[in-house]
Amino acid sequence: MFMTGQIPQSFIENLLARTDIVEVISGRVSLRRAGANYIARCPFHTEKTPSFSVSPAKQFYHCFGCGASGDAIRFLTEFEGLHFVEAVETLASRAGLTMPVDTTEGQVSDKTKYTDIYAILNEAATFYQTQLREHPGAPKAHNYLKSRGITGRTAKQFCLGFASPEWDAVVKHLGIDQSRLEILASAGLIVKKENGGFYDRFRDRVLFPIRDRRGRVVGFGGRIIGTQGEPKYLNSPETPVFNKGNELYGLYEARLGNRALSSLLVVEGYMDVVTLAQAGIKNVVATLGTALTEKQVDALFRNVSELVFCFDGDKAGKEAAKRSLPLILPHMKEGRRLRFMVLPEGEDPDSFVRKTGPVAFADRVERATPLSDFLFEHLTAKLDLQYLDSRAQLITLAKPLLKLLPPGVLQQMLYDRLAELAGVDATVIQGAGNQKKNTLSNKRFVKSRVLPPTSAYRAVAMLLKDRALISALGKVEEFQEADTPGTPLLCAMIAILRFEPTLGVEVIWSRLSEDCVSQFSYDELQTISDPIPEEGIEQEFLGALQRLRERAQEQAMESLLIKAKTGTLSLEGKAQLKNLLDQREKNRVD
Image (cartoon, rainbow, N blue to C red; front, top):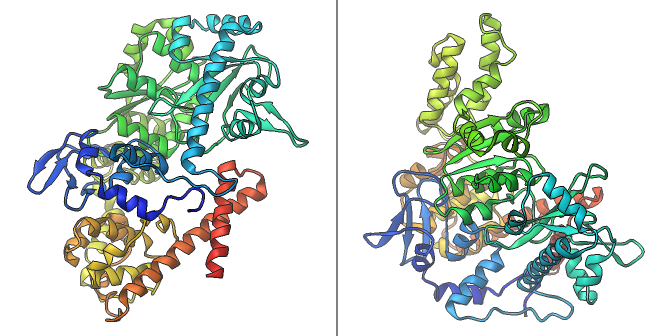
């Protein structure tokens, strides 16, 4: 027996023992032998030389470039975007193992919950497609799609559907019993009334099914037919399988149409994707009616090395283009390319491709503005650089953005370009940054301070003293969000030592990221191991980790409680909050 949403650790250990991580990864990434290990270009960031290593002996992968690391389960969750339970289920199927079932009365496992929601969403997509063909009110949906130039073939390709005006069409056709109604509600398809009963969320709308990278329907976007009604576009709410800040409309279709994708055009609307695909421009994705998110940028660059952002020609589109810069710049690693395309006033991709034709549109995409030009056009738009104070203001505006870029050739070239525009030497602009960097590099020669005895620093100290403690670790994910000083360092060291537990302090130091290095000096890293006792070290180590887990849980509860008070807590959030409160109560009893 185990708690809802959990899988026994014994099953996980047995599963990993039966899984060959090389086979799992080689089916998705091209590996080649290098001594005892296998290497490849990292699938989690763009690079020219292989830094991604897979160890058959340790059944572990690690990238020395970006720090990605883990076992076979972690690889599937990161590479394919699977939930933890889905990754376990995938590996269990490969290994011929039967997933454990939570038989607690009145409860279902995460596996069952996700499976049921995916199934009901697929049924709903089929139902909505049938409604588009057969419902008496469907002709107005047909007329709307025709007015936008969409053919029946394209509608079928994107599985477009129709939600009829009735308040209970889905309730009647798919809500066969109470348990099915609850699943429909969990999937965001129907809404529970305050006085009991349910009603359909989507009514009198053309529906765009949103599919994840595996082609499963995870949600819907609904466009009101005609000009009347609010909101114009309505998305599925957040559910256990759908978060609109994570998903991208059309990514599955783009990958399906071209397995060798190298570039993606990012637009703002569902209809933009559909119209452009019909015009033969198939490498198009859209955000889901919200501002671009960091997770979406990460997902985009995992699939391609070049992005072209296409913004509408109105004021909102231009502002969205400017707002996207701070979000995208940190992801501009070596080998990645970014361009911007702002359409003429009053145009969007849908209207513009129908007006100019696909050839002219594709030509405009090819001539999209490179990042460097777009950045400085944006920064100098309201400045007159013949005046010294405007040049000074340009430096003030540009430096925070350029600092967001990963250190490298692109960042240096943009600093040089800024210096050219401002009419000053590049060293003047970068002086403060270089001074700070030199100060950090010289810290190893400065007398060390005593680091605060937090649980995270204590755990680091114990790892430095006894590398064998790495084998006593549980899941790092349970405490990596703790705001305790030293937690980022601890997580970074774990990622390194799990792969190579015998490394010396000097080598560990050289592999830590700039974020970790900037917190303390090399000497301080050595001296935090001084106060660690000789006996009882494993018990103290596990106790430190448990305190970090409890702190991470407290933070999560605080965040969820705030959302609960404001009425913005999702169904998944409510379940998570209940589990956290139950766990806290259990810890108190223990």
